[in-house]
Amino acid sequence: KMPPFHIEDEFFFSNIVREFFNHRRKKIRYTIKTLFGKIDQDVPFQDRRIEELTPREIVELSNLLYNRYSKSS
Image (cartoon, rainbow, N blue to C red):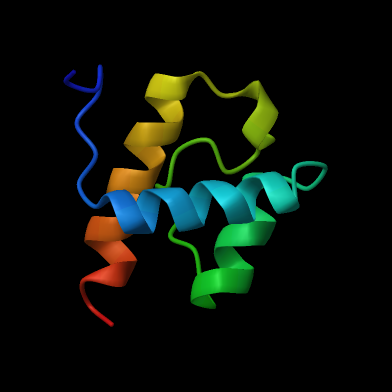
């Protein structure tokens, strides 16, 4: 069965979602800064908590982080 959303990298997605939920009481900005050492101002949802996002928004955020930060490492 095809997933309902396109995930750029499933390994990255599963790891980033695990990290977000490990810090679920923190805002998303905190986890991104902890993992990547920086966060660009235009990253969406950074002032929200992971539990406030829809599955589609989580995939969108994961894909953006993968393309922006992971590929350049």
